[in-house]
Image (cartoon, rainbow, N blue to C red; front, side):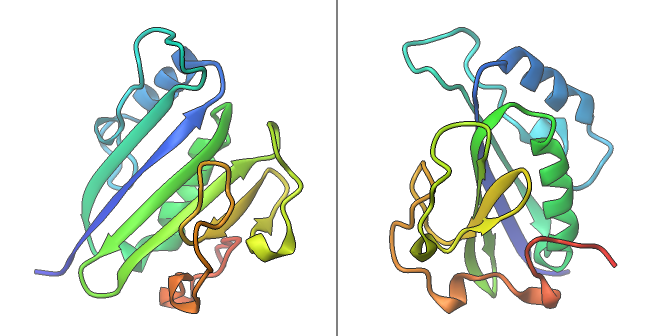
Length: 159
């Protein structure tokens, strides 16, 4: 049978929600990791809140054993969006709950302090743990909050 995992999160889009919707629609529903049907489409018109949010969520059978593949596919999706920040929460039945965060280098704050424990790559900053909307740690990052199953390391590099 296997254990159930739940993945949910959000992507804050900077401006082009129409383009973001087109990208989500292009995913289709044949792929098992990222599918159109798991995404909310955001607000349908501009509101007094400037940045639309796309939400997503799905249940999986032990996705944590395929987490590197999931992250690579998610980051390929992020590369297509004009996004500010993204968050994922992975809830596993046995191993606990993990939080993942991305902050695009295109917008806003890029002067994170060392104690924020963000990993800088070419396109964005990445971090584990409970983080604010802007990427700062909400609580001290604990060793057990860093996902390491199946030798997962960030940045993900497939061998």
